[in-house]
Image (cartoon, rainbow, N blue to C red):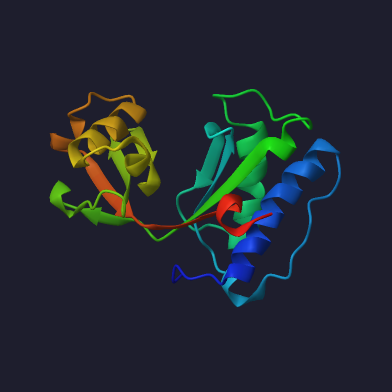
Length: 186
């Protein structure tokens, strides 16, 4: 998938994410949107929830295993109700949530960490059965350099901070098209 969506497609995905969360809170059916060609393509995506600029949930699919509209609907619900780091979102919180969607490019393996462009690339790091992923925007939000970004990705995988230097560690990068309600409105 090319990482290009019109503002209308972005708004539709944001409305789908919010509508899916609202429907689940009311035990209703999630909304349906007309998919169009681009939104029907299999694509990885994450939905991130913020409340008062603080992370409130974030779950996604790294690989494109479903059409983008199905992925966004599923991971929006998972971000609100299944992120083990947070309690489930309540109906009272819904108006205070800001939704951000990251549509991912396919993963690309790299052999040199210098290929990672901070603020452009996200990292998927795998060693044995452990893996960790950080989205491209995370490094920018915290002002990290490349090595700090790699160290935090190692920690997310439950590995030592320098595991990215070890033989047998696989590093894959990806880019993301990132958009939010704050940018496009509700």
